[in-house]
Image (tube, rainbow, N blue to C red; front, side, top):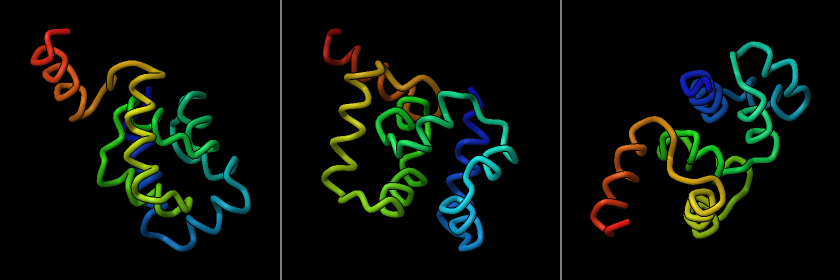
Length: 108
């Protein structure tokens, strides 16, 4: 997994109109500029917020991507919950510890 590069492309996508254009027109070429795993590419292509969250993408970056792809706020929040249900606990990043702590508090 290349969380750094996944977050980097999302950060750039959230701020740079040229990157946004390239994402819309030729995302495969854009993805080649980042060291992304096949799973990350699939998540980006599918705008799979739940999987991106479980992979460890920071929520501040992810919420802008959700808005970019036209996802309403309530759907964004639900997509993260659904991602944990579907793919398991957050695997990396700042939210990995939070998920583990929540499970301990809940007695899981």
